Structure formats: C-alpha cells, structure tokens
Length: 460
Image (cartoon, rainbow, N blue to C red; front, side, top):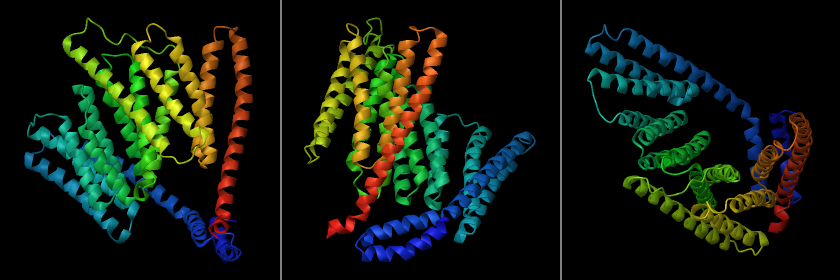
C-alpha cells in the first residue's frame, strides 16, 4: 500500500474511530494532516531535485559568465564593462521574476534568483576594481550579504536567505580572523535573518541559521586563543552551549517560535555534549592562567577572559536553578539536575584556580558528569517521548566508551591483542547498543501512540 492509498483508507477509518471515542477531533485531524503530508511527499521530492539541478546549473552559468568577463576584461571600455555587469545581473533577476510569477517554475525561479545574487557580488568586486576603491575590504562582503537579504525578503526565497547568512558568516570571519576582535555586529544581521526564517516557516534555513550561530561562536573567542590555553576555551564553549540550551528550553513553549526553539535546543545540546566530552580528557591543556611575562594589553585580555568565564558560570547556575524550580513536579530528577549544574560549575572553577596543583580530581568529576548526562538524556527521552535525546545519549556513550578504551588499554596490551579484543568489543557492543536504542525508541513511540489514542477518554 502506497502513501496515497493509505491516506484514502485512513479517511474511511477515522470517522469510526471518533464515534468509538478512540480519538478526539483534534487528534484525528492531526493524524490526517500528517498522512496527507506523506501522500504528497513525492511532489516535494520532485521540487527538491529540480531545485538542486537548477542550483548546479546556476553555479556553472555564473562561472561561465565570470570567466567570459575576466577573459575579455582588458579589451573592454569602462562603459562596456558596466553595461555587461548590470545587464547580466538584471537578466537573471528578470528571469527569476518570470519563473516565480504565479508559481510557474518555482525551482527554476529560485535558481535564477540565486544567479542574480551571485552576479551582484561579482559586480561589487569588479566595480571596486574599475574605480580602484580602497576601503575596509570585509565591507564588500557585508554589502553583498545585505543585498542578498533584501532580495530574500522581497522574493521570500529560502535559498537566497541561506546564501545571505553564509555570506554574513564569511564577513564576520574576516573581521574576527584578520582583525582579532569579537565581532558582535554579526548578531544583528543574524537576528534579522532568523526573524525572516521564523516568519516564513523555512525549515532548512532554520537549521542553517542555528548551525551558523554555533560556528560564529567558535570563531568569536579566537582572539583569546593567543593568551590562554585550549582547556579554558573549551570551558567557555561548554558554558555558552549550556546557556543557549537553557534559553531555548525556556522559550520553546511559545507557539510562533516553537520549531526554531526546539532546533536550537537540540543543536545546543549537541554542542554542549561535545565540549563536555572534550573536557573529560586528562591530556587537555590547562596552562597557567596568568603569565607575568605578558605585556599589559595581553594581561588585560586575560582578565577580560576570566571575567567572561565567571559571568557565564554565574548565569548558567542561576538559569539552571530558575528553570528547574519553575517545574512544579517534585521528581528526584529535578533536584539531580540542579545538583549536576552545581557540581559542573564547581569543577570548572577548580580548573580556573587550582588545576595546576591537582589535575586528576576535575577529570574524574567530568567523566562522572558525562556518564550521568547519558543517563539523564535516556530518562528524559523516554519521559518526554524524544527520540533525539535517546539517540544522542547512546551516541555519546559509545564515543566515550571507545575513547576510554583506547586511552586505557593501548599501553597495557600487546598491539595485536589490543586490536582483536577491540574488534570483538565493538561488534558485541555495537549490536547491544543498537538493540537497546531501537527498543527504547519503540517504547517511546508506543507510549506516545497510546497517549494519542486515549486522548478522548481523558478529556471526558
């Protein structure tokens, strides 16, 4: 039975289920909408394939146009150069308007719109070359990104919006890496793009927006990397990720940004788990925080970085207590979550001030916290019917187990025995973990299905 046949069958069965009080009206309509979406999934796939092919064609066309202009650049007059640049860009935009009008060829229209944006950026660079404009060069990328954002706003184009935020990330990266500063201005541009993404309901763009934010976060503390060790940077990223996770959990109940907030929560959890795992290695570099040999401006940067860490710790601890205290249930997991946050902050403070005297204690604590996070994710995934939590927990547990195996047994066994035992453990462990993961996912799906079926009975 294909999706369309299943949808028709479901239309026949749902009225009977509602009469039997197995489903209420809202649940029945939600199931029907979901089945309708699956039934029309083939059209969506066709549109995506057309869009991908169109974008590939646009890239080739853009390279061809730029190559032609470059090959004949020296032989053209200034007027001819400008005419060629503006006419090619205008032709691309007009073609996109024609294709998008009345949704004649939406995929082709998106592709031509992207071509217009690419040629717009090419024109900025070439016009600057024609008139020998010498200025702060990242501003050219900013102008390109701003033009793409205006185009995305007017034409309501997801592809161009994604292009705009990627260009803005390039602009911010230039400011950070070439001029060694935390580029807060990018957050304004990102916020405008995110608002447009939420208003238009762009799903792919939402993923790109959130991933770009965490990439920018990695870039932003680059200016401190010359004055402090990797370990302290990892702590900063961990605290930032946890704070973003707490913020996303706080705002996820608001209807108009629920999808975006849920995605932000998931990515923040992955980001935080990755850096908590990084902190679990005893070889992580924690050099002396202050070096008397540093000149005054470097010492000033170190003090600023120390203040940032302390502020992040305080904010995370306050946000954790406030968030979990807002939960009306008195389940032990609530108090364990607060205790987990408190122990983590104390451990990070230990790293800041006492790591040089005693290095083993914080590593042991971080590994215990990592294991407890796995348990907490599995429990929360089952309680809240979230497969992502369960899958993340098993993935984190597997990676941690493998890393501890290599750390512990590499120097204790003969190399051949190491690989034989490791291979057997991987096969057995992989089978067991996958079996458990599927079992927990089935249990979560079954619990959610039962809650839907008996919604009508509970309402009565």
